[in-house]
Length: 259
Image (cartoon, helix red, strand yellow):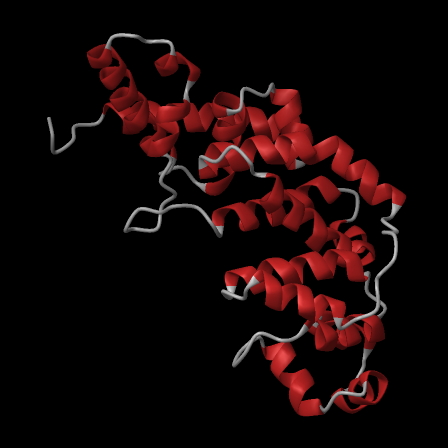
């Protein structure tokens, strides 16, 4: 919302006049500190800026839960505002979701080790919708690349991490189909340990190489599908894949403290 206010050239005085709330309360909302704002205040600013309320209501609700607000509190705050009515999602945005959703969900599941990744992916699509016109303008012809970076940031915001900040993919070793089919406990333990070491090596890769490896080898997408999901060129996907496999070969087989 701060960016929208700046882009539209609206002052706090004008925003206070349009919403009926004081500049102080609006300022607190925009700074995102001190206390979690009511939906009534948030909606008034959203409406004044001409932003779509539906995605922002869902994002507000998600933020309220993260701020430890109860379901009762959230429901009451939403009921303080008139019903929003049926969603009016842009046709282009709906089409973009239909094209990209399965890629995004698969990536989120692989990185976060959760079965139901739809909520996190939905947040990314809602953020994209909230600034859809701006996103299309900023992304130019490569909206998939713009959207992928947004999705990636939302996923990595919630990822379990090593002390050095790297994503911790080791729990994914317990979710592979191969280990689930091994009946012997010792053989299964060996398989999980080896796969966990390999997944741990992936976390050392640079961001784009990390994404390509996760999509290609954890999610099992083809190079063409990786290109479509990430907005990278086919040649770039090939190069990233090549360099990543070379780096993983070195990382996975380098001596460790255990050896």
